[in-house]
Image 1 (cartoon, rainbow over the protein chains, first blue to last red):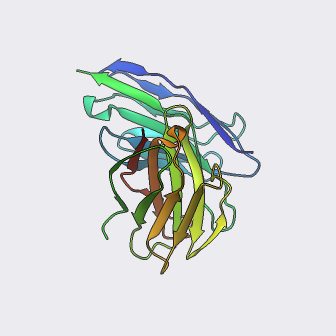
Image 2 (image 1 turned 90 degrees about the vertical axis):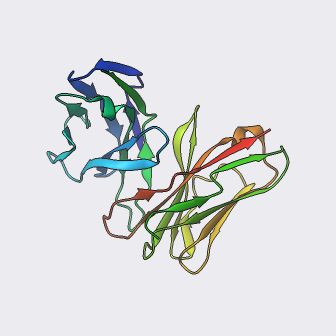
Length: 114
Length: 113
């Protein structure tokens, strides 16, 4: 079956530090990969996605590259801000017909201090 | 509506009681999903609807859990004879179809006491 493993944290950084959150996956097919973010008191929001190998998803200064050879989709940001404090979830979706159910990692809590 | 709407936002119930959680997806979204977010298990898929039918119920944890969707829109997740381990945040999500983005509601926090 499908699974996603991500570093659980918590991760605490100072403002302007470099961020990496590791994510690896196991899937039977050729999944699409996602990073979702959950800000305090808010719902899950899509941060970025990649649908095929070597694709790079990017948004709000965050990037992640779909690496099929290492089955990874690590999230990076060059300079984090206090407003990036949130829980980050790596996820995958197998394209099974019209069913795009997501398999999530357990989430990584990021705290950015000023 | 503008986003996925869930009600109630919080529900406290006594063990053994039945509860109903409601989801109103984004207008025009044909696919609807229920997930559960709990401390021990993270985010788990429960059930998928395409229109009013549920071709994938593989994530429902027991026969105490059921869901329906009517008019291709509103969905209700029902938990019968609630147990303490049912305490979690129940999230609803919808997708327009194809490879569209999945949008999540704010969730219903269920506490079984």
